Length: 481
Image (cartoon, rainbow, N blue to C red; front, side, top):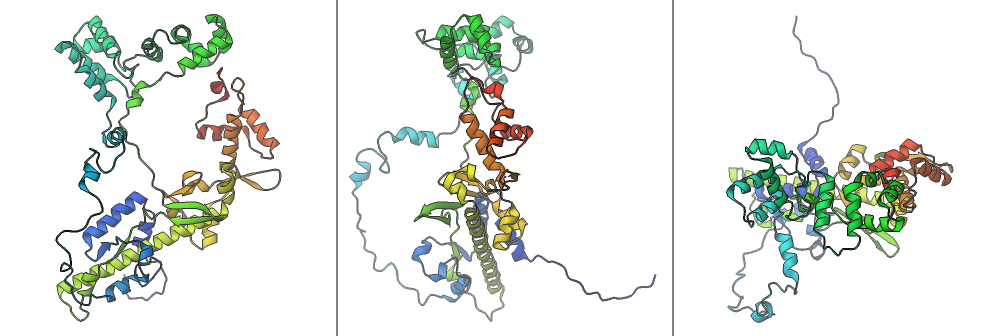
C-alpha cells in the first residue's frame, strides 16, 4: 500500500484544563468543595483565605469583579512598616479574669449546658458495647461471662438473638439450661427487650419491667402474650371478642403497647448523624423572595499580595516560573469558583421564580418542571443544570430541600393544565392524614377523591406514590386509637 500525506479540515470540541476544572467544581457537593479548596490552599502558595467579610472590602475582593486576580497581582506593598513598634507591653482588655473563670464556668456557658456539651462531644456507643459494659458490672463466673459475650455478639442491630439456644450451646460445648440462664440475665439489661428471640418475647420483656401499678398493664400483657397475631392483622373485632374486653378497654391496652419499642437495639445505633449544610438561602423580604448564597459554604479566597509582588516579568528563573505557574493556576481556580457560584445562584433564582406557588402555599402548589425548563430560562445546557442541582440544598421557610426536589413530572387534569407529581404526593398525604383511623382510605378511594378534584391518576399510580412516601396500605393503617 502506498503511503501519502493528506490535509483535512474539521472541527471538534476540545475541553481545556480550565473548562474541566470549572465543570468538576460545579458538580461537587459542599463538603467535597471544602476539601477541594483546602487541597488548593495546601498546594498553591498564591492562594490564601480572605478572613474579612466581602461587604467590608473594596472591589478588589468582590466576587463579581472579573479583574480580581489582576488587581491582586498589581497591588504590591509600598514599604515594609514596623508594625510592632506601636504595640504596648500590656494590651487593654474589656473583661476581667474572674468574669470568665471565677464562677467555674467555661466560655460563659449557662447552667445546665454541661449535659448538652457531653452529648455533643461524646462518641456514639453501640448496642454491643453498652451491653458489655453492663456485663462487666454483673457477678457472673468467667465461664458464664464467655457465654454472655457470645450471646451479645450474636445479637442483631435491632437487639434480637439470631441463633437458637441449642445451636449456641452446641458451639460453646455447654448445656442448654446454662446458656438459657445467661440469656435471661442479659434480658434484664438495658435497653429493655434486648436478647429476645422474637417480637412477642421482646414486648413481654418490656412489659415485665414496667411498674406493677401501670394502668392497663394486665390487659396489654394478655394481648401481647396470647393474641399478638390478631393485633398485627388489626382484627380488632376478633381481638375484642377473644380477650373479652370492650372497645374502650382494648383501645387503652393498645395505647400502652404502642409505647413499647419493637426494635430496642436501634435506640443505641452507632451511626453518626449527618447534617445537611444548605448552599442556597431563600427568605421572604418586603413581599419578595430573596435568593442568596450561604456565606458559610462560599469559599473566601484571594491572591496572596506578597507572593504576587515577587514575580518579575522578565525573569525566566525556575523560582520565578514556579511563582508564575502558581499564580496562573490560582487565577483559574478563583475564576472557576466564581463561575460555580454565579451558575448556582442563577439556577436557584430561576427555580424560585418558577415555583413561587410552593414557597407561598406549600407542596400542593408545586408546578411540574424539568431540567429543560431551567436550562432554557437561563441559557444553559441541561447537563449543566443536572450538575448544579445534584447534592446542592436550599434552605427555605418550609425546610431544607435538595434542588432536584423541585423537578417533577406532570399529570393531566380536567382543566387542561398539568399537575406536578410532587403536588399529587402532597395531596395523597393530606387525604391520608385526614382519614378516619378506623376506616382508612383505600387506593381506589384516594383515586376517586383526586378525580373529584380534577386530577386524573390511575390506582396503580396512587399506590406507587404512596409506597414511595413510606405509607403502608389501608389495612395496615387501620387502628383503634
